[in-house]
Image (tube, rainbow, N blue to C red; front, side, top):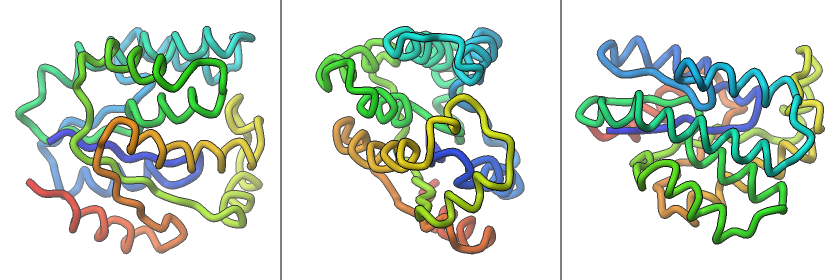
Length: 191
């Protein structure tokens, strides 16, 4: 089973993936962008805000996604794969950018993935207040510097993206305590 943990920056994706490792020692743990050698370089470009064109940023994410599917996902489809982000984030970010049509976003992502999508996605959803607090506690990267409203619009676009791609979405309240969130995810993983 291929699942993804989604959410805006500071939602707790990395924390939950670490917790899930304890329950599923044989799972393939990966991330997008950056789950491959090429992906690590692409991630640095995007998080470093080195591109000026939103279309260039979108195409970099697609390149990472294609490489990730080929190197990590396809060879492990018979195993439990837990990914920190997925196609859902890619589509969500592109929807918010507004420079590419919804149809083109879906088709280009289908092309990049060969139609291989997570079977289930968990969205760790934050409130505006909690997001504000969490951002105030860290040094911001290029994406986070775009502001709270931008990040909250991404969160809503994640919901829209799951509908567009017909991927099952489980929304989890990310303001709950860490263990409660983990237990909710575990109850919804069907393996």
